[in-house]
Image (cartoon, rainbow, N blue to C red; front, side):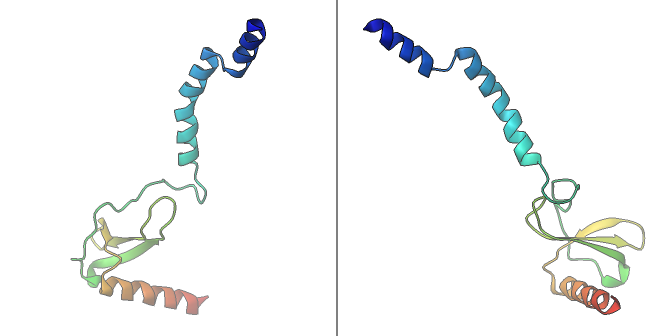
Length: 111
């Protein structure tokens, strides 16, 4: 009777080697799932860590709007200034919102 109980118990327990292998591979699998991009090939992080609201629109040469997504939970507004520097603008500032809205409207009318 004890022989049958031992054989059932040994079948239900995974081998220590298999368990160790699973534990070693788990972080790699989790990292792969988290890092797998679902949209675009871009970098999976926010480009704008710090933003400013102190730039006058006349100093801005071009704007790049990056919508919120898997890479970053907030939208990002990157301005290229006339002196060539790139800075991040606060997309919640009313002046910048107005500029973005006008750019979007002009793009829609041009298409």
